[in-house]
Image (cartoon, rainbow, N blue to C red; front, side, top):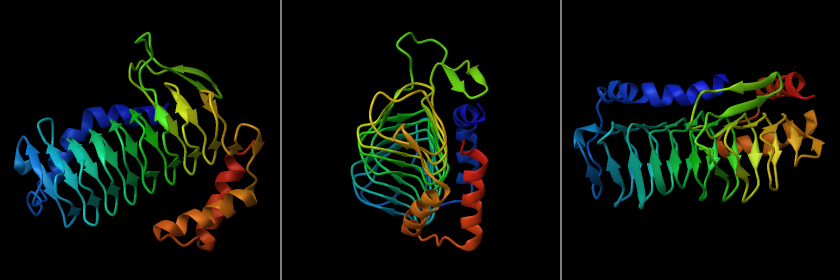
Length: 253
């Protein structure tokens, strides 16, 4: 339920946070960009922005931190924060927080990428939270609104929790992954280290479950992390390995 609160915080606080960050200044509107709204609300700090990127600042600033990159054909709608060394690879991204070293593509709305997450392909992700090192396979889609337009409930191990929210997508734990074409219902909770393959997907997926059948062992979890993390320049030091093992021991059933 606390993760769902991040979506609420994103909706309520992001505009003011981006406005405060904007006071740090930037390098102006990148050449070849299209701006809808106030050009002064486009804050670019030594980022690489290809031509024909649309900045829509009518609802809030767009902040691109140092080392970030935006490819042509992307629409960025504020309030929006793109963290250091994150890449936005095309599509429409609005009212979201993208942490450091992420890869984002497709339609994204009111979503928090904590950091080092990978969504490099098409697929809608809305009103969701993606933990560290999450990887979404191509065509992964989150539903963020029930057909009844009713309040969304989370199915948690301690029992159901009514969020009181009409819009809520998926809450995805650290190091979790989805296969191509994965369809996630409103209020889906994916535990840390889980590997989600095939449809339909349960609304509650326990940590480290592998394709809904077996559990990923501690050694298997560390082995995968050793392959993944260096792709973002992170060496799995003994300290990081021990933190990964502690995560597995704490959450695995």
